[in-house]
Image (cartoon, rainbow, N blue to C red; front, side):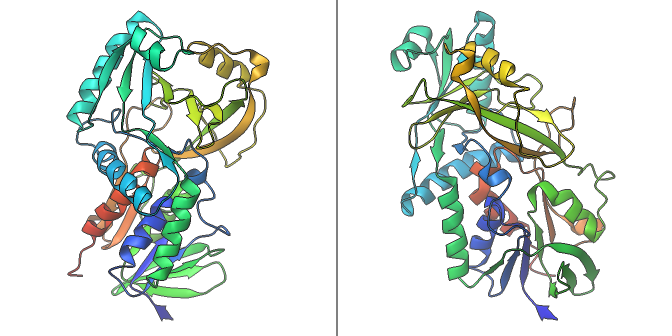
Length: 368
């Protein structure tokens, strides 16, 4: 049986960031990914936005890792010449009664350490983005967009250059705890032994956790699949800034917002609704909802927007439940030392990826 120092399950952007960081410290790191390439699910089906950290409760992992991850990610993008744009965003109020929500976001973001936040008047917002209907907006200068695929491609390359092995089409089917660590069995019957296992399996993280003996329902680790769709348009192009409505009061999403890519193309989304299975197909069910939501802040006809793509988020927050933070735990208290669970890594996980990798490194108990 082959012995390794670190086994990482999942090659989404978080798993790859951990692999790249750990490959500089450990000689034998393996990443097991059941798909044929990296980032096939949540990491590549999103808005490609680098968030600032204004939305999350103070001292939560989402807040702390988002603020730190934002800075780390911009540095990484610049260092490796990966496409990105620090375009900033407006969180706009379309009604007078939404202005207090902007002030709450400003206060929360400031407490979280987000810099440069400012509430702008209707006149100032229209000067910068004249197309939008607004009563004023919160300006968030640290928000930006990036080429997520090339970030993952670079992390993959750097990890392998440092000696890590990323094994695609490799599905973990069982994990056995032993006195020396863990025996991991793959779908082809191959086994490896590792003293450190990092569960970065995204949408399947709760199931991987259960393989080792950590019951998802008992520990409130159950992942709820939350789907979000995007619609696109060619009516508008080259809008300079991201534009968001005030967030959904239930906390399930940040609202149907403007998504721009590095080519200046425009789309809207995502919405948010819970589903029972992985299915990225779309139909016209939510077209009316999209049109009504977008029309609150931008003039657009129903037939000027059409289906684009969709993604699914691994939410710990079940329907009707309030805020849930990331779970990033060394499960030694449950009897599984150096089994690191990362569960519910949804937004702002993309922004946090490098900060999460650093955080996970600090969780490893070197004395074991």
